[in-house]
Each structure stands twice: as C-alpha cells, then as structure tokens.
Amino acid sequence: MELILKDRVSGTPQVHIGYLPQKTAANAQNGDFHYVIVRALKGSDEDEKGCGTTVKLLFGTQSTDDDGFMDVLNVMEDVRIALLKKRLLDHRYEMQLPYQWQLFEEQPSPEWIGEAMTTWTLPTIFREEIPDL
Image (cartoon, rainbow, N blue to C red; front, top):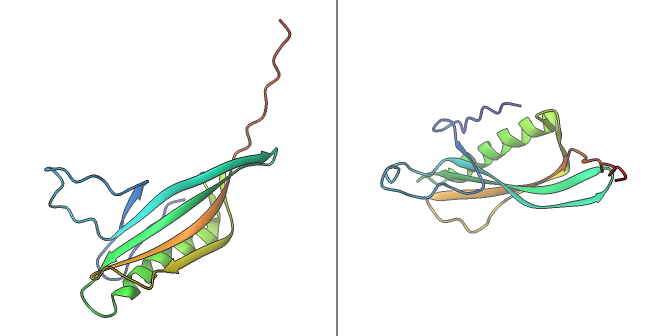
C-alpha cells in the first residue's frame, strides 16, 4: 500500500523506520520536521495463527502559531484513514483493531508530537519436519 501524506500546511512528511536519522555534517542543515516514525516495539509467537507485533507510529510537526496542534492531528488522521481502509500491507501484514492514538498534553513548542499504537499479524512460519537420518 502506498501512502501519500499531506499535512495541508507544508508538504509531505518524511517517513523513517525506527528513529530519526543521526545528525551529521552532511545533513545538519536538514530539518527533522514534519515526520512519521514507524517503530516496532515487541512481538510474540503464541500459536499456529502467526506472530503478533506492536508497532508505534510517532508523528511530529512544527508550527509557530496556536493552531499547530491541528497540523499533527491532520497527519495522524491521514495515516489512520489510509491504514483502516486497507488493513493489509504488502499482502501479508494485517493490522488488527483497535487503532489507538493520542496527542500529548505537554508539547515541546513549537513542535507538536502525537503517537498511534497498532497491532499487526505477521505471516505464519510453519515448522519443518526433520527427516530421519
């Protein structure tokens, strides 16, 4: 599934897997905002139905006005709608409900941060039989 995100204010957010990139001399001038970070938190294999994993989505925008919180909410809503419409990524990763999100009460102005927690079912790995030697 391809996500095209527009925060209605300043273009398409950067999407990062895991964490924001480390700052180096080459990228020091590049700003981190606006972003979506996709971070796997934990997983477990409980039975033959497959593996479950928890994935946190972190959203960050930057705004100097009092309505800056709306920018991050718009990005969060765009992602929520896109994921709930399909719920299946790459024909093998299925998102389970509930989709939970929050906007933090304390914000590091002028940045605005939110997060969503998602649970995914990963493909089943079948046990192979070991032939007698």
